[in-house]
Structure formats: C-alpha cells, structure tokens
Length: 68
Image 1 (cartoon, one colour):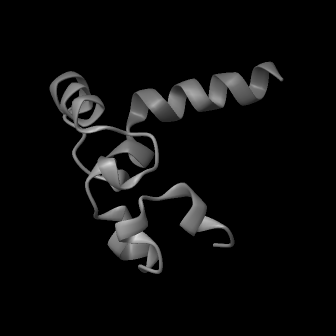
Image 2 (image 1 turned 180 degrees about the vertical axis):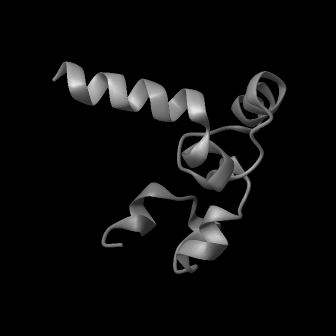
C-alpha cells in the first residue's frame, strides 16, 4: 500500500501490513493513548484491525460514501 508510512507512527514505518493491522491503534498517526483508551472502553477496539473492521465504523463509512 503506497504511502502507508505517512499514516503510521515512526515505530511502525516499514512494517508489513499484517504487523500494522495487529498493532495497537496508537500505531496510527494522531491516535493518542487516551484516544485508544476511549476506543477500548466504547467499542472494545485495541488494534488497527479492530478499528478497521468495527461494524459501526463500517456502517458510518458506507453511509457517508452513499451520501456523496
């Protein structure tokens, strides 16, 4: 995936997509430990994969795309 390094924390640059998917959500640039705590509490999201496959986020993304 081109340009993935500019979307992840420096510690995850150059990692495989599998490694990034299984990384904590804080691996994404702009997601803090506090944000991660809130995601865990609200949606039981702990990894990038959890975030990307969460049904509520997928529903919201679909609605937003259709609305375009």
